[in-house]
Amino acid sequence: MKVRPNYQFPLHELIENRWSPRAFSDHMLSREQVLTLLEAARWAASCNNEQPWRFIWSLRDSSELYRKLLDCLLPGNQEWAATAPLLMLTLVQTDFTATGKPNRWAAHDLGLAIGNLTTQATAMDIYVHNMAGFSTPKVKEHFDLPENLEAMTMIAIGYLGDPQILSEYNRKRELEIQQRKPMTDLIPISS
Ligand SMILES: Cc1cc2nc3c(=O)[nH]c(=O)nc-3n(C[C@H](O)[C@H](O)[C@H](O)COP(=O)(O)O)c2cc1C
View 1 (cartoon, rainbow, N blue to C red):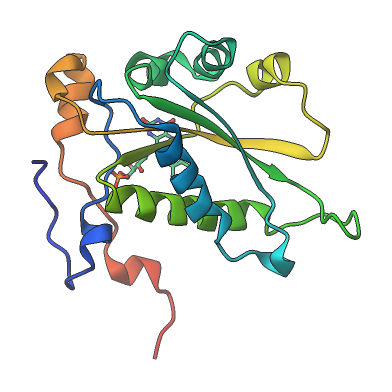
View 2 (view 1 turned 45 degrees about the vertical axis):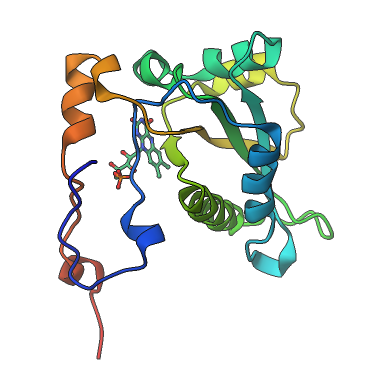
């Protein structure tokens, strides 16, 4: 069990138990489990109920889709994320459907959806690792996407694995205690 940080205030276990692993076990996820995670994402709040989040996903299998998703990752992430049973590419629709005006809250709302997905995953003992380290040109090469869809992140998802499968560099990172800025840095003004 990874050493947990000292929380300033006790939190719900679904928040305390979450962290971003790099070692995933061989234990696969079922299609139903993936759809449960996406259902949690679907029920997030969003500006004007636009639901701008989009997800392209594949279980780790021999499919062309999985190969393409893995290929989009930068090598440093590819190295460990290849052990995850599920890869996702997250995207946002950058304009409002009704008006065509830019939706500057789209990334915010995708974050809420991924927050929901992550909480649901934690409740299922499943771990989520978000990644900005992917190649946008590769996404464009592999997926024929409309102009108003912007790729935001990729996510590796699965059950916890043994840190011994990682390189020495990643094993060290895996075992580090999570760090955060002090609360006072995050709240410039309060009563
Ligand atoms: C948008 C976003 C992008 C991230 N990109 C990467 C990444 O490319 N590679 C990686 O190993 N971790 C990535 N992370 C994971 C963060 O480094 C991690 O969440 C942070 O260090 C806090 O650790 P914790 O999630 O275990 O609490 C990303 C996280 C987020 C939310």
